Length: 149
Image (cartoon, rainbow, N blue to C red; front, side, top):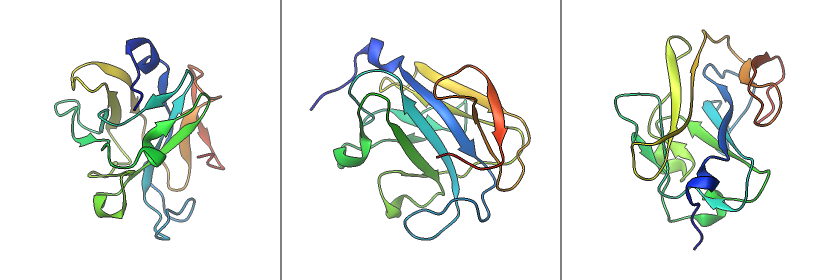
């Protein structure tokens, strides 16, 4: 199994999120849950062992498991969609927390549980509008009327 070195991890970016999803995007269970998109701007990387959280005091809130490389392995230029629905029994890409539409952020952390690879503290969110980078991996964050997960 391939794992990213520190250079590969630097290519991972939080790319888009929706913290108030009502009817915009549905998961495989036809539920409209919160979500975060991760973009891989670099080489092959497996998210297994990495962490994502909505709490800066608990950066290891959700750990990507190593049980399903078909979902956690990212090829160059690909995206991973993490459902923040507090319903991890629905699969490895369903985190054990939900996002808040106000006063919150998201942190992506390396397997050491300390090194923050990327983070965003986002402004108040409106229902069914996503908030993301203006292009994959770009620095600017904007609102999208039509989400692009």
